[in-house]
Image (cartoon, rainbow, N blue to C red; front, side, top):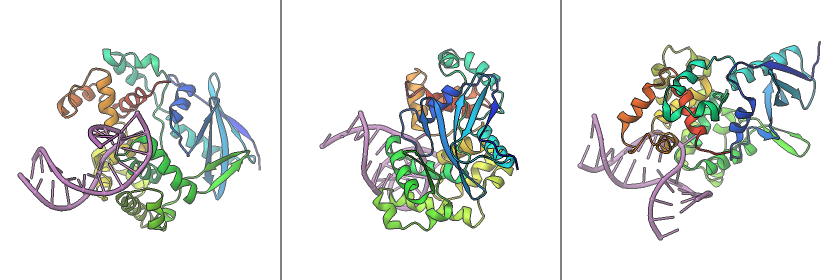
Length: 300
DNA sequence: CTCCAGGGCAAAT
DNA sequence: ATTTGCCATGGA
């Protein structure tokens, strides 16, 4: 069996690894990966083993290197597919850039954030859990809550002085002690919602595969919001980040309001018609526009 | 101390 | 059908 410790993936036009890597951490402390000196470090579980690798940007490709054992052909295929999905490498985003360039207030983003891709959360359970954790509270606190949850309930691997984590399985969260979950400062509502979602994965009434098979964004949205705790914002956040459903907008998102205000495009947050007018210019690319608006909220 | 934060639910208009 | 009250707590 061939064993390799590295491989590379060619990158498309309008892609910048540096932009994507920077967006992955911004000013936040995300426990699901590390970004050090422009390299992205991440652990994954595959076939019962924990994989740990670094990703770095080269001229025409990205270079992926194992920090632990060598990889079989199957393992490399798994990682390759994971990263292509994670960084949205298979998508031609030229049309989105044309739309941005045609909208004067937003034109500058084609230069400022050139090559930023819709960074995903491939695991649907993680995407939903993270969005429930992030409901309503400030992002810094949300990242703190996620870290406490993941460090206790997720698998981990150590490399040098660093710990890397796998997001907990639904069963780990469903069986977690409610009192402990309160002690790490999750609200009782968030605990309830997290367990409802975890139970749905375990009993098979929710899966990424089935969600992806639904024919329209509306159908996928309805499928998610049937669960208590998943409203329109959470559903569309997860569709955008996990399914890469580009037609959805996480309506009500504070960050969208803030960004549009900064661009001088929104005077009143309750002016839904104005928001619809702006997004109408990005038909089919709404999620990418949202991503770029979020990007605009944090300066390098 | 006050107000807000990458919401959602349920009760009250 | 739309608005309001509430949850819950760190951050600014």
